Image (cartoon, rainbow, N blue to C red; front, side):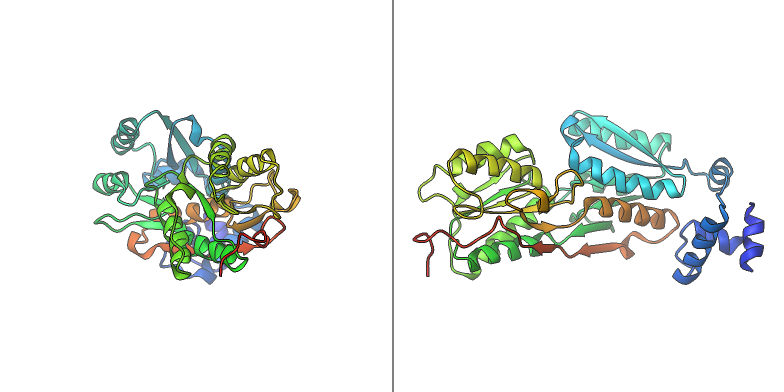
Length: 343
């Protein structure tokens, strides 16, 4: 089926159909959905080479990863969501692996000169991210997975890390916990800073001073979390609850609790952030894991849609989404042990 045939079937102009399929913002949502559903039902697919020739685009979106450690379960889920949605529009993902910050900056400069990608997905931003400032300067369209503060309009999607951590900490306080440990992400990353803000706000609201010994930043790995939790459980008074930055972190915390001869959910409570891994289900753990939950795969899919909108001409300053985070209570979070609560 040709574009002309699809347009005739819909009773629309070829221009309107083309713009609807390519996400142009001036096409209303009802028309865009009608065109997309009809194209899917009739099996219409735009000719990729012709489309790239007509638009002058490469038909690819770039993602730069710094070091092998970023090729973990979080990134796998994220790329799965991103790739599935971009694939529907016959847009490829170009993944570049670098070893240092300098190499990453060089990769963006090459992208600008070679024009091998039409846009970039920028992940794990810092509070004042120089990479975002550089991409703006190079005039490379990009969408940020997270937030940053630079003197330029930025398209972004983020989850409410501050609200999620404040709510989880408050729940533990309501259960009588006062010694609550936070195993956070890498220092300086915006999401880590936002989670720390939520944690400290919840403690402050109850007049509870924070203990720096119960706050740690690291990569989200089982081993790092195990070592940190193990050390914290040797502090006196020991923490009676942990906030784990990811499900991978929670596995390490659980191992440390078990090695200390304690029982999770009874002696020590745990709430983890869950990016919804299909192979690490909080409901299937024993005991089941209380979590703050937001799907990183869905975030990847939505970032693909926002990138397509940017490429269709939507201004960056009009794109910004803050997703709420669910608090799912299960067996791993229970009342503080008797004798360890405070009024």
